[in-house]
Length: 204
Length: 204
DNA sequence: AGGGTAACAGACTTATAGGTCTGTTTATAG
DNA sequence: CTATAAACAGACCTATAAGTCTGTTACCCT
Image (cartoon, protein in one colour):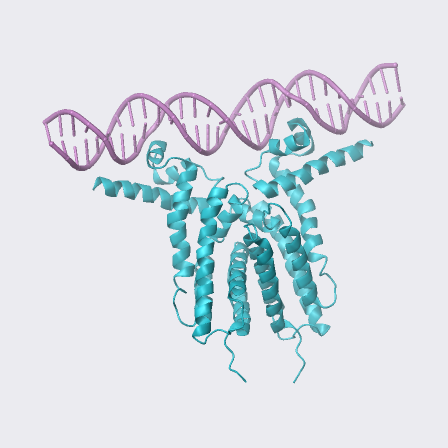
């Protein structure tokens, strides 16, 4: 194998496993050795590729975490027609994935935001950046929905986006306990109700 | 001072300060010494009153944390007329309090749920218990609202309660970043919108 | 083929934090 | 006033985890 490829391969393996375990156990409660044990690697390997635990985590946030959020929550909505139905479908898909986790650990992004808030402003910024991209995407989709005749022109797109993000973060936090299937069903049901207020209404 | 009183006083001081710091820095990231330093107490004092860090934390959850959630989110709604307006007022109050925190650390209960999920089923149960009390209270209030003619009889009270809790947890998570005032405003605005769907409608 | 460097192994250092233990103070009872 | 136990102080033990450093393996280039 090419050296450059091997380097990338090892780095990415550590990052991928790192995100998994950080997600499960949290950043502070996860040791570097926990990750390395899983991969049968040594400290030497880790500190050859990364400067510190923090720099390692940031690299994960900027790469894997961003892509994860983007592909599951942003991309399915970006530039699409009929934003409201797309959002429902997208959220439902994401919740279905979560539902099938044997042990679910909530919404990765909000978990980390909770963990780092007030402790590490640096990392917080990277996390908030992802959130911001999501929000902007939702607002854009709603605005486009207005011009395309899917969304009521009178609604406050930013407020709706905030409300959507809030409810999603919340339901994912709740779903960590037992009956996630029922929670998902109830949530999507209410989301549809909420969207009835927002969708375009034929002028009387 | 009476011995019994002094014992209680010290225990409660440690618990109160403990909750504060656990809330700010998280359980795993807070050392016993962090708490004791704040109170100018020693390890001897702590382990005289509590068996372990975990038992200490559980005692906080069952006492202080429960009361905190109860007094701010449950009591203001319990047994009241006109549940929808009461819920809006209650949530708005709670968010206003959060808004005025110089550095806000989110919703205590959901922070701990996020931190302990998958790590300590014992503590998770205590935390979920509080959530359950809240949920039951909301459902009861909504049902009472139906019979009192404030709430549409066709709505699914449990689904609405879930949706409310979700959105509250989410907005509190979002409010940890900068513009909490604007977030609160947007959130309450959308909450009122949502409640228009749910309130009692005069039969045509 | 063999020298050189990237990639990695793993023992070691150091700091932190949970918990123990012995000694000391303080308050109450008799 | 004094014996006694509650309440607390703080040194100490031990485990863990971040990070260092030296040695070893594997791969590439000439």
